[in-house]
Length: 281
Image 1 (cartoon, one colour):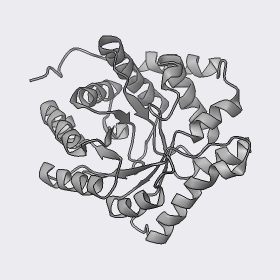
Image 2 (cartoon, rainbow, N blue to C red):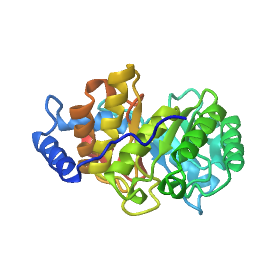
Image 3 (cartoon, rainbow, N blue to C red):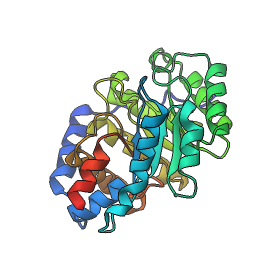
C-alpha cells in the first residue's frame, strides 16, 4: 500500500502571499498577445449540459475548427470536450484536424457511482473515439480518508483509457483545505494521471489560483523526483482573458516554459475562446 498519510501540511496564508507575489511580477518575457495565443491553443472547448444536442455539439466543433481562419496566426483550440454520447460525432468531425476529442466519463460530475459502472462508461467513450478522458475523483470517499480506494479507482480508470490521456478532476472546491488538495494531487499523479484538473465547473468555488498553485507544487515535486512531466488544467468559471493569464503566470513561475503548450497545459472553458480570439485578432 502506498503511504498517502505522509506529513504534508500546506500553509494557506503563505500560499496566498506566494500567489500574490507571482501575479504582481506579470508575464515576464511574454507579451500579453503571445500569452493569449498560447492559452487559446490550450483550451478544451467544452459543453457539458443536460440540454446538449447534436446540433449544439456540431456548432461547437465548427467553432473550434475555425479560429485559425481569422488570420494573424491565431491558433485553434486543443480539444473539444463533451459527454460520451457525442464522442463519435466529435471524433468524426475533428478527424485529421489536430484537435483532440475529449470526454468526461466515470460518473461525472459527482463520482458517486460504483467503479464497474465508471469503467464501462470510460471504455464506451474510448471505443467511440475519445482521445482524452476527464474523470472526477469520489470526493466523499476522499474526505472519509479512504486514500487507497481513490488511488485504486484512478489506476483502474487509467488502465481502461488505453492510449487515451487521463485528466483527473479533483473538484478542489469540495476538498475543504489546501492540504487536502495537495494530497489529492499526489494520489492522482501516483495513480497514473496524465493531467490533474481543478474542477468540474459544476460547483462554486471552481478553479482558484491558490488551489492551482498547490497542484503545481505537487507536479513540480513529482518532476524533481522522477523527471516525468504531468499536465495541469484549470477549469470552471474561467471566462475572461485576464483570469486565464493569471493561470499562465502561475505555471510559468512554478514549472517554466516547458509546460506552456497544450501537451501539458489545458484550460477548460466555453466562453473564453471567443473573447481571446477577439482580443488578439
